[in-house]
Figure (cartoon, rainbow, N blue to C red):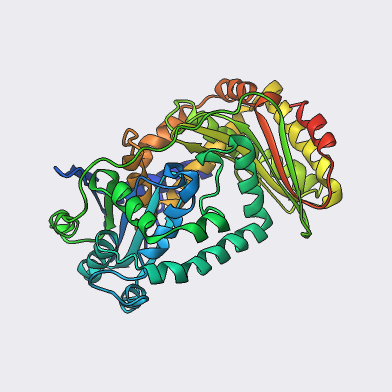
Length: 450
């Protein structure tokens, strides 16, 4: 924010974090959401005391909207938007123009959302808007460039498979969801990527990149008539209804374990428990449960597994929520010969919170942590654009950061204990591990004690 604030000499950490967060919230004057007749949604979020803006375009599509034949096309198409447009036909031209104004820019693809953003000085708003609208409304999708880019995408897939942390996360979702879009890798596999043709890209682009499925967000410092400029630049975006995603089906109760032998320095595991979707009212309780168990370096799991016993280099807990499903997960990197020991400690901590719950002081520390970390995370225009924009894409009730914190503040210790007892059950559990040779039998026995 550029200034320091002093409320008084005697103030505890929680009060300080809340005070600073309230100041941060005031920087956001008022968000405005406008829906055009085409279905395009424009979200503007002004901020004081900044000379930059973030322009973020979010499209409600991802690997969850693919068939097996074209698995990976959402991610591949993200690459292709930067490989030439009607106004910028030369590959690399988009990057050069954005680099020439010192802009930060990138794109990302997940199972249910794809995003494109530019972060730049306020005087470059028109230039940035022109480029972003150009790549999303007039991509060439050249057959020649598609063939070239296949090699790049395949290398990215191989790189992620070589990374044990990424590989374990992918295996876990395959184990939890099985052979359906929720269980497929976002980038697809080498076979599907190499089989894709220009017609596949055109079909998918015209099906998913429609006005009603798109949100344009600008946060920070921008022109007063930004809405009109955005509306003009995106007027050629195709109208219509986007193709539907495939609903996720639960594989049902039962302990699931999958081990992949790999020559790596340490074993990486993900222990997850099937939960609920992003709209579920218990999501606030779940967030608090994640902080208490493994959300920071003073959490229960970090303290017990790493600090007291030295069993892991990294360990953490949190949740992943989709529109029609989700899970609570614990991830860790552990020496090969200590995996069963570490898993026993992890399961013991799950049992403790089910039996004993959370103390008042521990819950207060968790809430103070969320207040402070939320304030820090939402200092930037890019974070605010993402925070508000994703709510629009996922059709959630719009909540300001302050309103979200009030929900989290309302979480009680009995609610956390009750949710732990509900979720932490052997029948909901799945364990994925990438490392040296391991026996499934020992892991299955431990998981049945959850």
